[in-house]
Image (cartoon, rainbow over all chains, first blue to last red; front, side, top):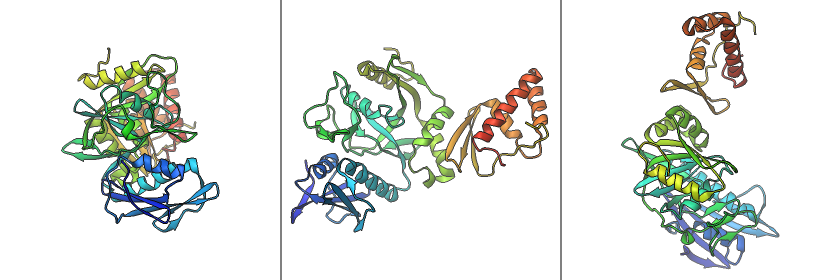
Length: 289
Length: 89
């Protein structure tokens, strides 16, 4: 479903709501890179016509100018960078609108009334695993960005239902479905073609998996201590400096409230997914299946 | 390393004890370091008034380990602290 609210002089304008953040995208309706933007955000709720953030995309030869609340960007960007740039602007606006939230670089999923986070460095395989887990009864909350709030000693993930972005094509049996957008560099799986449902509510998090990829080893999970989890989590807090004591207590708080595991994934995604599912069902962290 | 040097931790560190480990956030580098129990003990002695030799003696007394091993471990730990900018110049 597209959030198109107006079309004027060949410009398509759509509005979106993400928590208290409302933003609009305006651009040439027939442009494939602008189309990718719209598909990326299509599952977000529609915002009121008046938005806090208005992003306009202008075509300039082979490149694009991004105009952020009437302020032009300093450089013209290539089409395949457009989505990355716009996501950055939206996430920055969200951090300004929600200074109380902890923004984690993570994917978030919902499974049998529990939330989980996939945390790891870029290229570790968070998004690929997120996509694969959507075939194992995990419902989708977000990819790349997991905003967390704290309530009564628990940490709740806020949904950010944009397309899952993969840097490489997943192996069988997790081939990409029809409707996936190919940017030439990345593949974007719109929410409406996911194999699972979207989770639209705040999700209490019970597990964090620190994802690390290994080509040869069998997948493995290892429970982490609180200090190890906090140590690993801290670098993935995007807005750590906005929190007291530079965010270290926030990292420790999350590590204390949530069970954490080091997850070594392998090329056998199916086995990795089964291991994660088992860890979600396990109260003790024992993950043999 | 000169045994008379009196190492001192930087003053812009955020420190939290979690279980038996010490988490140290260096605001300069924006990195968190996880110190095990022994490293945390050495870190605690880096107060600007205790020499490296005194630190080695104290650690040696607490752990009853050969003094050469203690000396090596303390110096290596202090080198790591310095490499990670946890000590004042």
